[in-house]
Image (tube, rainbow, N blue to C red):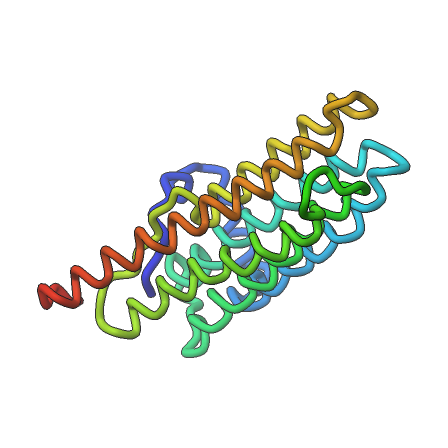
Amino acid sequence: MDRRPLKVRGATWAKKLAKMLSDLGLTPNAISILSVVFAFLVLFSAKEAHANKLFLILSAALIQLRLICNLLDGMVAVEHGKSKPNGELFNDVPDRFADAFIILGASFYVQKDLFFLSATNVAWIATCLAITTAYIRVLGKSLGTSSYFIGPMAKQHRMFLITVALILEYFLYGTAYAQKIIYFTLVLIAFGSLVTIFRRLIIISNDLNKGELR
């Protein structure tokens, strides 16, 4: 299994939590599904933030819980020897749904059209481009190249930006800047994902031309 290089795997808390989940009998696939559940809840919590700004913090927390699941499913699979033959499917497919739920969910907080495109439309564009970055990575792997997790808008970058945007929205709640932070974050994710797509395509194309396969 190709794994995203993450220093946090060496953190004591991550190792202890992975061991605890493994001892409880949770499978990597189940943890991957749980990550989608947390992401799905963002669809509702971000929308509810109109009535109570604490839901902005809840949305940010749910995103981090999704990322923790993404970390732990691989650790339980590899470090604790619980990988399954279908593990690659559960490692990638749930992530695509989770990305969509979180990006679209964030747009639900923006009630009014700020510019020529509504936040929902921008979110759909950002979602499609974000999912395409993963498609390019997997396509390259299927053709024999390494799995490239480079950005500037890889998964961890997208989730970091949305998390920070939600926290900023909490502190700017009710001001003239409210909702604009999320809108511009979605624009940035869309643009950055497009750059990431081309970067990955160029590297994979060069690898194929040079015969630098795994």
